[in-house]
Length: 223
Image 1: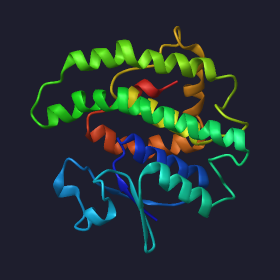
Image 2: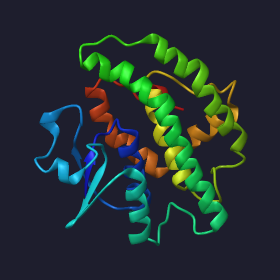
Image 3: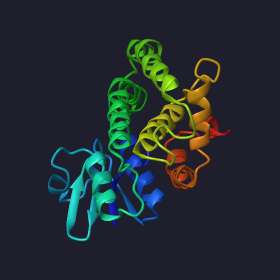
């Protein structure tokens, strides 16, 4: 199975974590949408939106992390990351959607200002990043803090809920931020536990060479 994306991408990381949780081997083909020279010749067909990630499974291609993970769950149903129980399933999909909103409201502006803008020769707009960190992120973190009551967000095993939260918070730390253990003890402890699970350990090891070349450090992720 081929995966088109880039290790820094939250959505690429989501799919890779699901693949690792299922024990599915895959080849990552680095595609950075803002860098045309990284795009395959058939990119418009692979990704009609121009966004990552995309999988290529034999003669079948599929974009969008959410769609990909549902495909993987249907094809490899013996190792689901979406629960079968209706209530747990609904909750898990809700948290995936919630973290999609977190990505839009917090991670996207942070990444754009701190990474994309300088790559394009611009200057980060600190008003945008300050607002995201001071006014927006705390609302999301406070909600998550109140939802954590055990090892996993939903049920008794890791699900797409945990994958979605962890995939976002890894990038949050790459960008020099952290979850305050004093302000959000449950969320901080939950995230630290997530980082010790095999899928996350494997993922961070695989990401390390690329992130180091890009100037990001995993030091903030150390326990």
